[in-house]
Length: 160
Image (cartoon, rainbow, N blue to C red; front, top):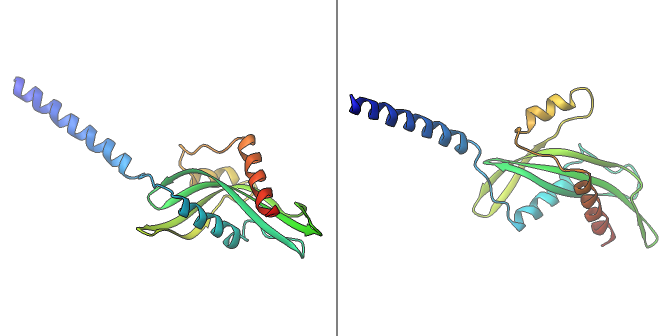
């Protein structure tokens, strides 16, 4: 009788461990390197005009992002993208701007990442529904101060 009870306990333990490991394995965390961050920033500057593009003739878009999380083939970020124009020696952020969560679909190899595509929740009535569909529930969006810091990074980039 004791052997049967021990076997049942062992069997239940194995089932629970298998369940926990399968859950954790489905969300493998990617390590993002400094070079990966440069790839992301370049992609955001050049390939996200569907999110925001310059509206002024001499405007240029600059991006900054906060890493929110990863899994094996996706990177979750908060993107701030702002348009700056140069008037003489002064730069001004008159123009288009956006602050939005974005999912980057990526390939990872030993040389780093390559970004395949991106998705973001579009404005409007379905924003909340799309956000829940695109982002896992453990992703926490940045607060106001984090967004202000991203805007400061963009201003520094525009002034360079």
